[in-house]
Amino acid sequence: MLIWLIVFCELGFWIFLFSGLFVRYILKLPKFGSTLLLCVPFLDIILLVATAYDLRSGTTAEFAHGLAAAYLGFTIVFGHSVMKWADDYFAYKYNGQDKPNQKYGWTHTKYEWGQWLKGILACCIASSILYLAIIFVNNETKTEALLDWMYIFPSLMFFWFLFGPLWYTIFLKNKAQTTNK
Image (cartoon, rainbow, N blue to C red; front, top):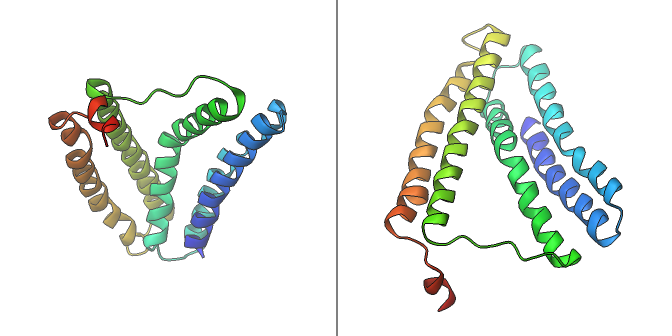
């Protein structure tokens, strides 16, 4: 059931995001569009409360409980930048604003390093949520699956490092390479 709630929250994120931008830029109702965009954080609150309630009611923690913590950590850190990216694109496409600049060379490499550092922050937030859940439940046997996530986060960040900032540090993304394809 919790997996479906995570899927619902992810779908809800995109529905509220695109509905808010549609209303803001296509229907030309910016205040109502902003109201729809402000609904996005409530999805995280719903997921947090549902997960806490499920664990507190005596359920043994499963993979889904850890996934909920990971989802919350990553949406807290990356949610705003995803919304800004989509808002910039809609402003360009439907409001005549300048096209968002693509990043090349060292600018792109710095961007990749920043994204990776944000990923570390997201993992730290998710780990904090997991530790708070372990303390909240106060039963080691029921929260064992939450500790397994502590091994997933370092592996995730290691591979992200290899194929993200390290890759782009070694192989710079140049504008000439992308325009000739």
